[in-house]
Length: 334
Image (cartoon, rainbow, N blue to C red; front, side, top):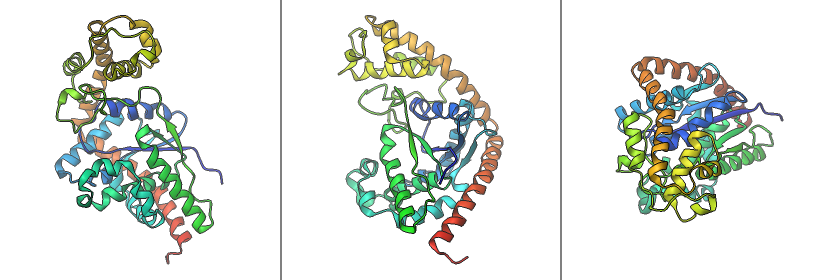
């Protein structure tokens, strides 16, 4: 069976969006609109695998949607919606709970990382949410998903579930979704610790650049970012063992659309007293306009809600057709 080229991706509304979310995901979503049929979701059902304050969840959902729009995702070219408005996500997730094997789920490293030593106190949703992720993707028969290194395992599970469903029922119904691997510098680390991913859960605000930060905050955080006393090397090999330097060079490369090698050829031999101001200027130039556009959307939440509702209606057309066929394949009585 030939499947239409379609991209699906989603971001959880579980905290402040930051530079890592933008460079690792949102920035990459925009050009895909020109080559693929794209569906971009705010995955609010994933967010509640851990408790969320209802007011904060609502606010965060609008913020993710505003970031999509401010970055340049066009709701006329792409479908933008929040997951909970399309009930078929949950319905297909249950089917996939019955297709996926316990052994597959127990190997998911993100569950181990998030549950930690208190795995028995974690919600069932946190354990089973990779099946919901598979449902998100396969409900729209997405052929491609832009992923970072930390999400490859979940996409592999999606491929396993699709293959097992097809094999169990003797059909070629779901595509074996392919990854669109994130390019260079997509993995953005903390500004205070180059060994940790940038995260909204870090207690230090200086560890991350939030997409709602204004120009002054962006510049301040970059100038205070942890570095080291050595000048920058002229070649990439010289960044080995220098996590903070590697991170800052990677951020410069990702924001400018240039390679790390190109950045080092320009700044090699110079110290961070020269490099950080240049990075701060670049970050402000790239992020401050998006910050202002996000603020404009968030000042009119009804506009965002209308876009999400329209997107949900369009997504539902595809989702309902998929689930109608799934029910027939399984043998559910109509």
